[in-house]
Length: 337
Ligand code: R5P
Image (cartoon, rainbow, N blue to C red):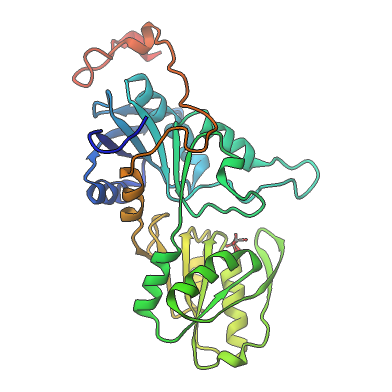
């Protein structure tokens, strides 16, 4: 099955993702779908698609920066789209959560990356994401059983740096960041180095900075895939100052900046920028054109050769209620439990 020219793509934003979904629809010339979401008084999630999806490729846009809050609503939206006749239901998650607990670091721990991948793979036909944290897994297909499109933000980050920073020195705060920092530095045509990080806990890291004297006079640019608790960036910025460098520019793909980390990092940086993979005041680099291009390209549902879309389920009379009149009227009240 291809989703190239001639097929209608409809982009629905899950709460908090309206700006990215609108930018995506505009960049790709896709239809914008409307979804109503709210909480029942007891806290359960209510979801209703207000745009007809029959025969269309549906893209649910949901950056998973706060997954525990929105995941069930996302699943309900995907199931509703499928029940209502969507041809394909894709998850567009510019930030993919639960990638870092990719092994049992301590006895008894849940390997949440695996469980999360299983739940997403059971719900969607396809996953589109940007720079997932691949460290111990080499590709998403070692975790996810649905076809994925894994995009890379290094080129757009590099272009932002080339346009905005004079004589940059790219610095990765830890060994894992080398894959991003080296790609950015190559495109910018700037030197790069990688620091050494020791993590003691969720909010406790040490960063060792070697002597960077050879690059004095350059503008340090700390670049990483993600600022989550923000402590990696904060500690690296703090250590750079001790070597007498100018305050660094901090550039991240996924700017989560939990708790007060943004304010703390801001005090140590000359500027903080992120892509719009996660909505945040630091967003300065748009990913929608990159994602729209990938969505518009013909693809095969079996790209990774792993599995075809989930088999259609037989609709019972509750599923069918309100279907024929969709989207003009509500289902009969007896369906409301
Ligand atoms: C780790 O390998 C990543 O590349 C990031 O450096 C890390 O996840 C950032 O985490 P935090 O902001 O919580 O220190």
